[in-house]
Image 1 (tube, rainbow, N blue to C red):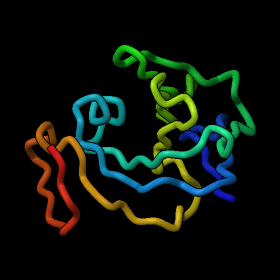
Image 2: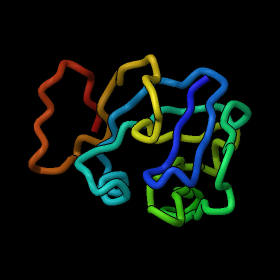
Image 3: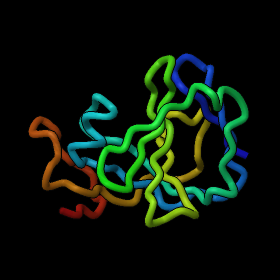
Image 4: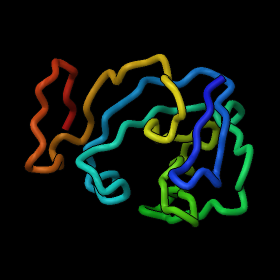
Length: 128
C-alpha cells in the first residue's frame, strides 16, 4: 500500500493497487500547475485510490474541457488529474507520495513544449 499527502499534510491518500507506467510530462499545463520544468505522473485505477483525510480541502480546476486538476485548497499541492473520457482512472502526481512507488519513469511526453532550460540527458523515449 502506498501513501501520500500534500505539502501541508492536511490531505492524505492511499493507493491500494498497482500504478501504471510513470511518465515525465513536459506539457505547459503541467509545468504551470507544478511551478517546475516537468511533472512525474502515473495512472491509478479509481477503485485503488482513496482520500483518507482532508477530502473537504480538495479543490478542482478545469484546465481544459473535460480535464480536472485536483489540489489541496490549503497549500496548493497538486494531487491528481481526472479526465472525463477515462472515468475509471486518475493521474497521480508521484511527487506527493510519501515513499518509493517502486517504479521508475519510462518516458518523457510533450517534449515539444518542454521548458527551454531543461536538457533531457537520459536514454528514455521522448514523445512530442
